[in-house]
Length: 536
Image 1 (tube, rainbow, N blue to C red):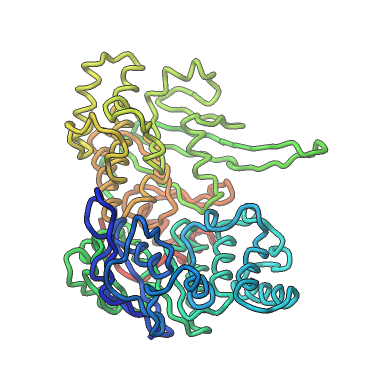
Image 2: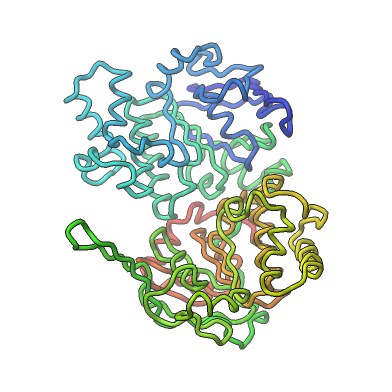
């Protein structure tokens, strides 16, 4: 047994929403085993991982009971200098966001070398040889070149591979992975998961893998531990948890996972009226170099797309495919380089800012991060009534309208005097949707609007989008990299790669019979592809 946690309890500071971050947690990881810890935000997954690593701020989070045994040694009895010897050499950790975990002003090879300098007596030549071998083991192209690059010069997948190489370079017995694939594209995610499994098998280490994605669980877990509000509520083999869960919370989580099999959707909500007509839209970015020769990036290339009233169209593809650029062109947050964009019969692609303003109420956008989208100094009432009042509605009428729309999105109108930080993430996203709906637009663009939400909250917000679409008959453009989400809510799906549309059609047709090799690759890479989860 590599890791054994016995009755671990970590106390929260006074004034927190509960007394303990985690309470009476017990779990174990055997050599050569992958144990997945799942649960929603606030369940205690990351606190458990950071307590094992000795990285929790002791003034705010205090272990008050229990043991953490790493091959028989209790880590809770070790001081900071002793824990530094354990970190890296005996416990490796892959963090969720490599860009914040890596030093932005130090070359990645030197960052890995720091570990070897601290924990080994190898000379510089030996250290570099070990680092290049580690980079090659995680399948980084041209390790010699990457050794001398900075984090910002690498892709997201390459940065995560650097984190894996750093975690494994000293061949620890325990690897902790804290949501290491959450921010990655589906194909990159599949590559990283395969890599973790392969290295774990070769090295024979134990892996504690923290995730909220049951597709990932289906692909890599040997056993699963389910946490809720700081407690372990269920534990068992992967097949037992996925196919016959016993605890109501586990059942709720699994029932909330969207299926990759799209339902045969009725098109009765779709109207004949075209709300959006995009024709041959291009967006090219250019920059001047030092000597006048610049770099040109074709972010969107020759995209044509129509949306009808009451229709929900999804755009899927990896980072850099042009999804968000196309959305921002559509609502004129950025100007298209070429092509025409007609919304509700008016060509808005060439209108000046002044002439565009009267039409802004007809199209609204819901962003990925609701906390950054809302002004933290404004109450919810102020945020909701600003738009209608800017377009001529009186304050009394605007407040009444805001209260009505808040009820529709499932937020009590009595909460209008509260500020954004007083709501949960899911509630904040509902408020952002309400702010869009209160304008009574013809079109709503949702740009990764559910990607940061827990699976159960995600399901509620998706249900809300479907309800609003049916209630108001507006067109919706839904941008996502989550193929499960697109399968369950979209009438049609558009697949983009390198700024181009490579395939589009009814969701059932594209998913059941993909024609383009890129679409086939995306669908094949979806985690838990062969596991049947309940449909929305």
